[in-house]
Image 1 (cartoon, rainbow, N blue to C red):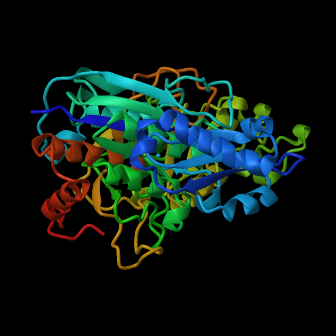
Image 2: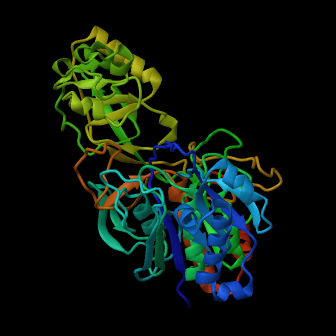
Image 3: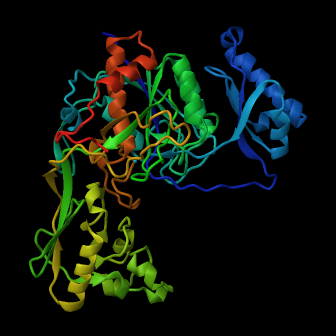
Amino acid sequence: MARPHLCTLSTFYRLQFFSCIPVHKKRRFMLYTWEINQREKIFAGLAVHSMHHSMLESVLGSAAAAKESLIYSYGRSFNGLAAKLSDEEVDRLAVMDEVVLVFPDTPPQLHTTRSWDFLGLPFDNDRKIIGARFYNSMNFHNTTDIDSPRDSTGHGTHTASTTAGRVVAGASYYGLAKGLARGGSPSARIAVYKVCSSFRCSSIDILAAFDDAIADGVHIISASLGLASASPYWKDPVAIGSFHAMKNGTLTSVSAGNHGPERGVVSNPSPWLLTVAATSFDRKFVSRLVLGNGKTFTGPVINNFGFNGTSFPLIWGGDATNFSANSISLKSRQCLPGGLDSDKVKGKIVLCESRSSGAGVIMADGVGTIMPGQILNNIAFPLPLPATMISREDINKVLEYIRTSKYKATILATEIWKDTMAPYAAPLSSRGPNRINPDILKPDLSAPGVNILAAWSPMASPSVYKKNTRRSKFYIYSGTSMSCPHITRASAHVKSVHPNWSPAAIKSALMTTGSLGTFHKHLIC
């Protein structure tokens, strides 16, 4: 049986978008040109690049200007180019006979063990990464970014290991979810294409990765990313790249997005894509707050610390405004960095009015935090200090307790509870209908995407607080980014059994054999 080769467009979970418009008002554009003919494919490395350079030179006026403008020349698998151009230059290029369409570079975003047993899939021996490329045309960096295929923030490592990670005994996130970890297809080989920095993703980088991946001959492409909202196919880099992959016999599995539970917000709606929603898993991570009067409140937080029963005083963030730093009450109520007065907060558990990374409490020497959260989601987030998330109603009860009592409180380390209602659609998972083409139903399939344990980059912080110096080989993550690689593995399994099947046949086989209901005979919706 042939081993499938998987391609992972490896990116990072939390992105900050910004734009810098230079004085000369040149922006980055993608020009999509006519399909490469057979002769050009033979000489793609030279002929196509020369044609693109000539097109730019005819508009920009010199070979030097064309060379400076050109960012990518796509020619290995499809015909197009990316360049820095003014609006006037774009208008002149757009009327050329060779040009099919032009669109600006837009920033796509990310959609952030035992799940394979939960799905009931078999596994076999491990293998290795067989290729790695990286793309950073924007030349963006922060203190963790590197010009290398290596993953510096964890998202790509997590998704790749979910699909094809090796078998590892005793895997856990600081003792949580401990057991035998394995990817869905440990024998599959992976080619990694890193297309995002921690600052942002780039459409033209994504297209460059598709161009390379198709030419490299990968069998399945897994892309846990997409535009913030659905766009016409001809403006969507994932739709364009995956279309050419499909024409070359390669199926692309993508995430549906994390903008649920609203309707009509599904990303990656192209009919040739296998678009994956997220469902819950049969375990949930619960942290408990125990007040001095014996009342207990629970919430979904990954808290590896706890106080071992030791109690500490409570304080509401609004009572600890850092006036010396010209802070305002809103900033302290939300426990934002710099908003809390250390003299008032030190050694106390802080009640906050909004969810955060915990950085503000740590900076003010607080020992723990209580935040509001959407309890019904059962989506747990790792935090770098003892913490719990409780409902808004319970936040008000705790605030009343602070106002009327001198009792202390304690926070217990996270426990694992069985979620007997799983699987159900994760509230964060983007829903249909498909706003681009309502006749095409999207998402196509769902898979576990909540509280998934998988491998983590040793370069990445294990929490959203970037100054957290702890490092972990595994991490618990949620999102359609996590559900996508589950379906990638299923696609690879079908491909290995039926190597001559088309992407459409593989997609059809998975969709027509998937289950419509939960264990409780209710539809997943």
